[in-house]
Image 1: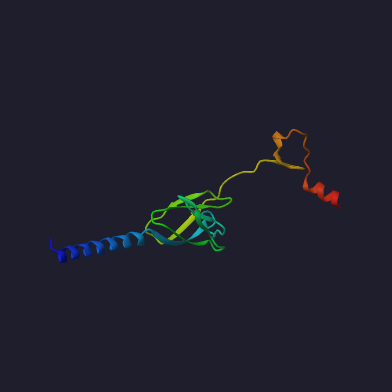
Image 2: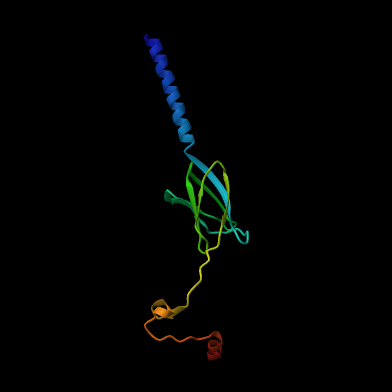
Length: 142
């Protein structure tokens, strides 16, 4: 091959490689936004942690109106978690806006005994317990 043809071939290969590299880098991350609401009341939920499943250090928190914005690698799975709600994992697709609804976590509190240095469930307390009702406390404070 002659030198001009060889040089032309190298230039073409270099341009194609640079173009492919640029396209791959441009598609690696995507900025998503969305709103998180309560599934039972349709109210917005503020303070929901939104993290990337593969990298829990990468994340954000929803504002008081339930809105969030996050830049993530394309094809990531987002994890939505908040106190009193079930954790939800949402795979990112082609949508740039996500409407996420969280279901309330149904957990019942057991009876709790307050002691001087912590708390325990009533049934596992090693000492006798006494119940004191609100009416009795109000009378004692008068």
